[in-house]
Length: 239
Image 1 (cartoon, rainbow, N blue to C red):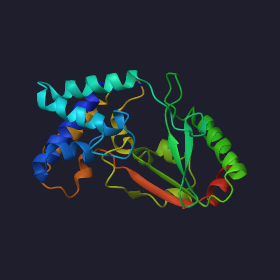
Image 2 (cartoon, helix red, strand yellow):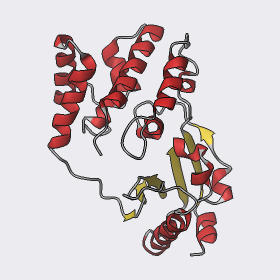
Image 3 (cartoon, helix red, strand yellow):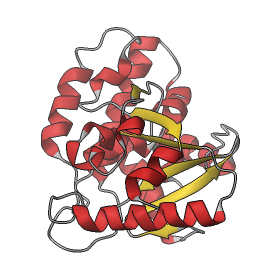
Image 4 (cartoon, rainbow, N blue to C red):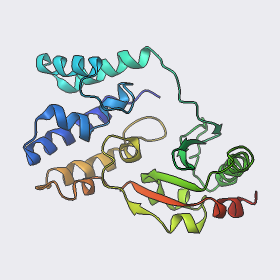
């Protein structure tokens, strides 16, 4: 999916406001409080000295339109392709192994139809995918003890109904997700465009923000972090 320029504009407006409220240099705010570093395919090290990141910052100094410069560099980086993470995929779901005998669940829209992948009609397919995924985890990932998730999607009943109650009961706001789609993904619709109703709400909240505390409340939905033992998943999906 190619993200729209409007998405980058929202990140940019957020960075400007954070820099103003915190009195921090904009370069550091762009690194810590936007999705730019990840979207430019620079990984997750968030190394301020990365040569491409430094190229980006130098370009900003000369750019008449900083959002356009950001977007054009993104398009260039996107066109270069890249290696996808080696994550076992099951339709709309995948997982990664984490240190400490844990796995993290990921979701992406892998369907091309007109229905939402989280619609009532598609729920049986999502449950079948999760059942297959956890059956493989039980069979192959011997020793895994816990399941972790973090996403704005856990605010939605259509997503929550796919997971065991014991897991859902652990949901807590994760207030430092400014670099990730776990927070910013809420603005992207299924067709790849920005959800303008959420964008408008975000901007209105943004310009009323006067302090750094509670900055994540500028976002209409919060990123929620969950973690519980894996056994409730095996029981819930019957594997």
